[in-house]
Length: 292
Length: 314
Image 1 (cartoon, rainbow over the protein chains, first blue to last red):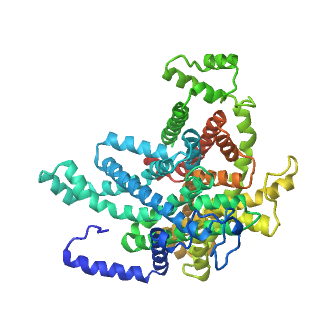
Image 2: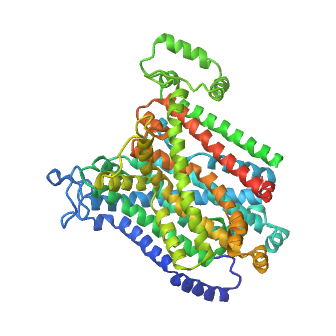
Image 3: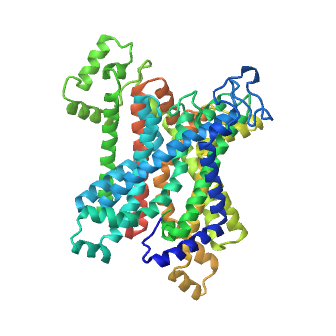
């Protein structure tokens, strides 16, 4: 996240200063802890989970939380706690692929719009506006009606609808940069447009996008959980926070624990990434605050 | 202003055309022939012949699209499979329920969120400000569909103080209002936080402006400064947010309708997706998208009317 740091010696102290500022930020540190928890529990789920997430135990079905099952069991006697842990892997996968691809594509389109010719800028802006004008969930429902539910489809919908957010941010920063002295100097030294965009504009634009990406993770995770809850995303028997909520909703009159267990990790992930993203933004790029 | 309105309305038209195109193209992607998809597996040969004639299915794709677009824009959205009732009628029957839900959900969150943000900004870092900040993040962190499920669990199943499902009987206003409480709560809760944060941030900014200092120097009372001068300007970004976020609100309404089994456009689309009743999906998605586009258009025009600087940007 090097934001145009000029001299090497200054950079070191600046970094330490920023780190100190971040550690002062209570919610930010709390968010970081939650985010680390999210990654660790998802990556090490097979080692942490006390049971196989798909192991049936019909006699123990719909049991309340206790020592044998921390979060109770579902209607087939599967251990809810283990399923929540494995559900985190789905969430992590969707978030990692969804955010990184839409960030990358948004960066490319945004720089092209900001640095390229006027007509391209207008065309891209019009496309962004059009994409943003669709209600996301309704669009997803229509597409799922056609293709049937799948994880890949959820990803495509997430990526297409999040690109405009990143692209607009990248475009604004590029517009601000394109006539600065160091870019003009590069151009007069004979650097080509692609080299200027790739080597000089991109590194200066990417920082704020990374912060936006951190704040976008909850959105992506929520969309996945929501679609899976409707039975339109991840399909049973795969454990995801959405399918756990779906199965819990069906037995909500018998046990409250499944909809609680499926929802809590969603809230914690949202809180974690929101707090972390906001703290990073305040430390590294306070200007972003206005736009949100 | 007129030029801006014209351009902005033109953009809305382009977007509606894109929607029509996407919906038209989607049906062509379904495996199987478009006739079975539109009429269902049990259509009679006469019905098929009439449909081919009406939609000009033996012409080129472009002509087919134009026919579809013309029909849709004149209110003919086709007929539903099985019941064979006009889709437009089916959608219009339930659309008011969705709009009422969205409006009440947005309404209560504006009534709570805007004053919260305003009071928080007048005394930054006061206990009230801290509590508001906590509430904001808390409400934003719980997605709308989770609020629906959890409030269903808490109020309707554990405490049994509010009705669980449906929208109430026709003509029974009190019953309908009671049925509206939980869905509207769920739809609006996240917005309380968003609005409070946004209003707080823009109020803080406006309160530092020179004209507010000038008003103070003239000795105007605090209330006049806050409500007459600052809040008016500070509330502008909120209007844009409400317009842009109307889609989010509609999405929340879709989930709330499904979870509370409340008749509405969202539940209709969902049931039709599950039942593979494509004409209804196509028609209802189009109507919802047009409502959404109209809402963003109105919000943008309202902001441009209130703030002349915006007109330069399009």
